[in-house]
Image 1 (cartoon, rainbow, N blue to C red):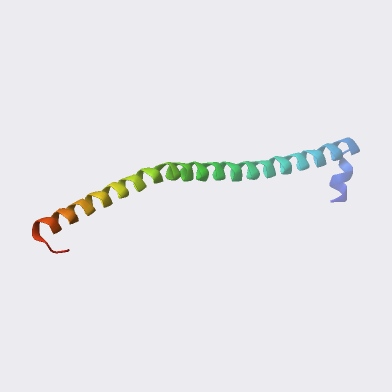
Image 2 (image 1 turned 180 degrees about the horizontal axis):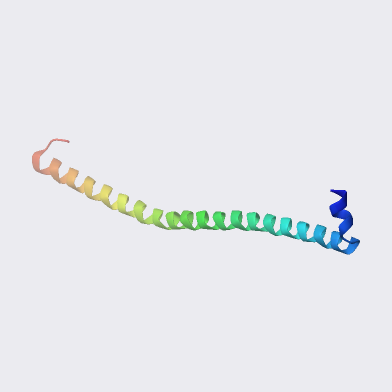
Length: 82
């Protein structure tokens, strides 16, 4: 190992260390960027669901109103509760 290191000058050694550190830093930045991207995609799905929730709530409310109306009509016509 020492023979390999002695073959190159100090400038080459420093540049190789800097290159290795730069590659490691870019790899770490890629991992962090991937995490942020995944979180963004998940938040977009959650936002879509949150925007859909009021629609479902309103639909359930309207169905409940219709059910109460049908129940009242049934009681009026036949005089007995369901």
